[in-house]
Structures are given as structure tokens and as C-alpha cells.
Amino acid sequence: MKESYYFSHDYNATQDPKMIELLGECGLAGVGFYWILIEHLHSEPTGKINDIQLKTLLKMYGGFHGGEQVFSKIQQVLNTTGLLLKDENGNFYSNRVIEHKKERLQLSEKRSFAGKKSAEARQNPTSVQQYKGKERKGKEIKGKEKKEERETPAQKMEEFIKTVRERTTEYDGLLVDLSLKGIPKDVLSRELDKFTNYWCELNKSGSKQRWEMEKTFEVQKRLANWFSRMNKFEGKPQGGKIAFIS
Image (cartoon, rainbow, N blue to C red):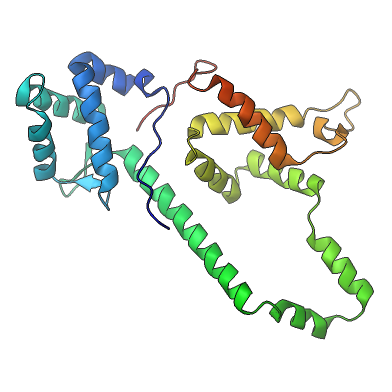
């Protein structure tokens, strides 16, 4: 997969206690240098830089607004707050960068695997049908198999509910995929829970859930409408929750 030159930026990052401390100790110069550092870490294959690289960055940007003394203070605050960490080999890194690069790698591997499977299917499109033809006979049986292979909207909703409530591996993939589209993972996780709780509310008799009383219900379209309405309030923290940086 071609590398995309962007990374997710938490919409209320300035409310994180670590960022508040950085802002208080070093001002906007500290916040600005932090995001410059995050950009450089993302550009590194390992997500880490050594001491020489860090000093080069400090020297490069230290010529503005107070010189190297100010940026030495910024480095100190980054280290004490945990926004910048150091491994056993003396390399500097950020947990948020390492996690994001790991997620992108996992997504890339999943897409690569799916692409290979798709290519194999195109190269040998009749292998499955030939196997079924040997094992099973009759138009009635074949018609039944095709019907069973089609997943109904109700089955898709039931599978979605299970995925969200049990936090299966499919749930992790959903979070990664949508977070890369610009939705912070903490917001996404909260909204998926709210969506599920809303549509799973029981009626007065307790016999049916809300989604089961709809004439039609396609979970993909309902999710799209849900997040479309949510985007009208984008940038406004809800519920007083803070997306912490690590």
C-alpha cells in the first residue's frame, strides 16, 4: 500500500494534561515544536530518532523566539511529561507515533492479504464451483446454498452488535479504518456504543429491539447517517471527555 503522508491529530489535544503542562512551561513555542517533532517521527521507518537527530532539530528551530536555551527547556519538559520517551538504545520516540504506525502496518497487511486472495480467486474462478459440483447434485441444493451465502440485513445487524459489544478483532479493524478517515478513535468508540445502545433498546413488552421494528434496516446506511449528523458538531468536545495523548 502506498504510504499516505498524514497522521491523525486529536481534536482536543490541547486539553490533555501533558499538553497543558507543556504550554504552561514553554508557551506556544513548545506546542509548535512538539508537533514538528511528531511529524519527523512519523517520517522515520522505526518511528524513532537518535540523540544527534534530536539535537539537529533543536538547533534548526532554536534560532527562533529565544534560541537554543528555550528549546533545551522544551526538550526537558517533553521528557518529564512523557510526551517524548527514550528507549534502552538511547533513541527518542512517542507512544502515539509508535501506535499509529503499528495500526497502519496492520491495516496494510490486511489489505495486502485480501488483495492476494482476490487475485487468486480471479485466476481460478471455477475451483469452488467444481468442488461443489462433485460433492453435491441437484438444482434445489445449489439454489439453497446460494441463498444461505447471502447475508440478510438482519444478520448483518446482529453481527455488527456482536462485534461492538464483544470488541472482536473486526471491531479493531473498524476503528482503525474509520480513524484513518479523520475520526478520533475515542470519539468513534463512544459513538459506536451510543449507536448500538440506541438501536438495541427494547420495546415496552421487551420482545423486540428498536431496529427490529423498522420496516427496513441496513446497518451500513444507518451508520453513515449517524456519523453524518455527528459531523455537524465536529470540533466540539462532547460529554466533557478528554482524548489523552501517550
